[in-house]
Image (cartoon, rainbow, N blue to C red):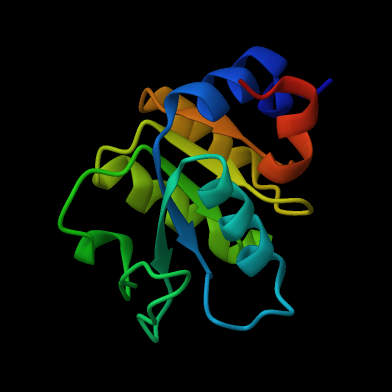
Amino acid sequence: MESWADESDIRKILADCQTWAVVGLSNNTSRAAYGVARFLQGKGKRIVPVHPSAETVHGEQGYATLADIPFGVDCVDVFVRSELAGEIADQAAGINAKAVWFQLDVVDPDAYTRTTAAGLTMVMNRCPAIEWGRLGP
């Protein structure tokens, strides 16, 4: 298994991260981010929508960027294309997040190296809604 899908890292993030910034989350109900954010809320997690439109989603105020969030974030959950995801991972380190989670089909090995070297836990190419059944609290 790839180092970026380590089961102990997945367990740690699912158990310990309470506030999840969901990058790419909007009110588009057909997008995966919408359903995953709802799932995380149902598990007691606070979700924070991060999208250029800064929409309120699932009752939570949205922000245009990670830097705009005026409180701490535990995990940055990334629903953008792989070629854009590395920059988001770098921003997550800049806001002192504890973890970064790249969704299914989002992979950037260089971002993984930088992010883990900065001390963050990182998972790539996985979905927390899927992993919860296997490894969740």
